[in-house]
Image 1 (cartoon, one colour):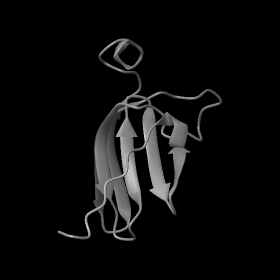
Image 2 (tube, rainbow, N blue to C red):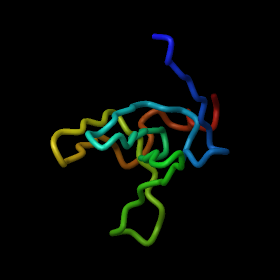
Image 3 (cartoon, rainbow, N blue to C red):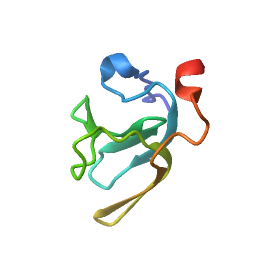
Image 4 (spheres, rainbow, N blue to C red):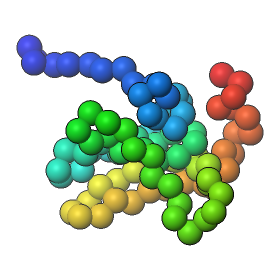
Amino acid sequence: MNNLYLNNYSQNDGLSNNKVTAIEIDQTGRMFVGTLDGLNVLENNRFTEILNKNSSMRDYMYIYSIKCMNDSIFVCCTHKNPLGNLSESI
């Protein structure tokens, strides 16, 4: 446990929202982070927001859980935050 490191990330680092709801690491070491406003991936110390390619508008999604299995990533989410304006009020 001597080699344990902790990093803090926020919207300033590229997260879509500061309220993190799920974290999962895949077999290649990429970290998937679910927030109140969508899905992000941390790769090479840089966050990328994963957007819905089928929409011309940005879709905000409340991510409930993320599971990486083999070469697939499963995400459980809703189209809108079911808790109302929680992301703006906390």
